[in-house]
Length: 275
Length: 305
Image 1 (cartoon, each protein chain N blue to C red):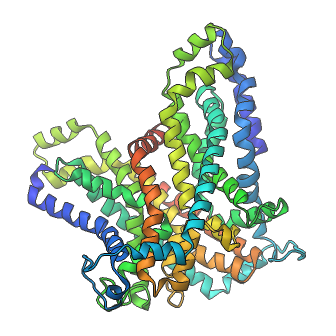
Image 2 (image 1 turned 30 degrees about the vertical axis):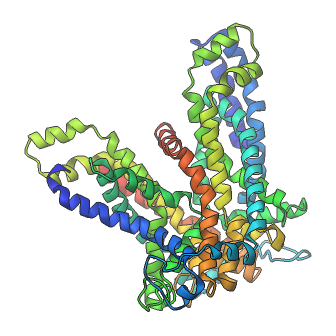
Image 3 (image 1 turned 180 degrees about the vertical axis):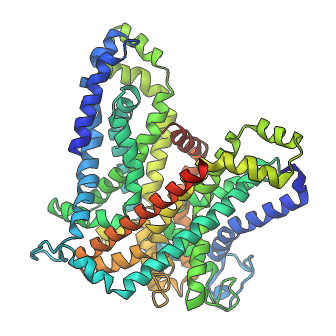
């Protein structure tokens, strides 16, 4: 790219920066503008009289406190479940030369092809038999199962990176498989487990479709559901509160994401290269 | 799943004796140990993902309806015959295709441009890279809300135009949002692809007198081929099957102008209660995606030769 000339490159970079950042800045600015300013159409990026009132209004009017607590419980539960299910399985897939590895990784790709509408109807009927529709437990279970294949894919890359020799040394010392897993593999796997956990947390925290179909009770809605309902009810008039609520809901996943961004992207790429 | 399981055990047993390099302890532990470790993950996925999917595929050949005491019977191809006559369904398919192709192509062009810039030695690269990743961390619902605020006719930057509410502009506006939302995965994947290209190829081409365009065309693009095919394939599938973003942005409006197939099927299932008909739509979507994949991947393979 050297001959293209620096000015052109910087111009292009600036255009990308505006495209990527402007919507975010607009959200922030809308959240800080008082209602009067929004009503008269202050279309400047800077609020004239910045206020935090919108945040209080969002929490109160859209009942975001309850929704955030529900989202947090579902995400935490799903993450715990995914780690418990994925760790042994990822170990087996990375260490044993089983053809299931092909099946499991193939499933990650194949499952993308099918629209969720096909899955959600029977799933709804199955969960209803166990009284798990309109239940946070049911939603937790569904989030865990749908994050699992990709989590498995990520985690097995981290396990494959741990040299076998370390384990074999343990085996020669007479340690059983369970002890090898707990005492030798697990500590080395902490970064991989953290990245997998964050991936699951974020995808559960952000998930919308299953929550929309499975949850009816207003006391059980998750954040995306609460906000989408707020859009259609009061969102057209309460623009400031809507922006503030949207911003609040994004903060946790942004923080989690920032913490593991590097690992998540490299995990995705190494998974893609090896897979 | 049964087939897969049988395949699995066969493979595990065979490796037990097939890898003499490993110690005796490992050989003994091979197949037997794998199953208990895999079961906690396989069972829930089989029960709540594979099984419902198979049922969903079958549901498209029945007259299943919402409600507790409704009997369901097999109706063969009736649902598909009904779909043939449903002009709304076809128009939603056309919209879905325009949306998915536009998002995929624009995202590829925008992502490739950004990846090239990020691969060059520029200031503010870290800021751009970070910003390019942000949409990944945001819930689609929030992305939709953000753009609704930005494109709000009274308050936003729209200058009085109701971008999301007017017939001519709604679909293009939704496509722009779709491109924004999918920038991270496309850019990061293409950047990884760029970084994997051997820089000595560029140098050799430059020594031979190839200019910027010729190097881009004959070195960069061929080097990116596999990665580019993979990410455009995924982007197309994701876009065609996407739901939350457009559901919150427009709910398919105005007048069905942004009624993606998933939104249409959702309304059919949970608005009208026609589960069988909605599943049939899902099946048609699968056929279309698989057809597209075959066509696209085959044409890519052929031109590679």
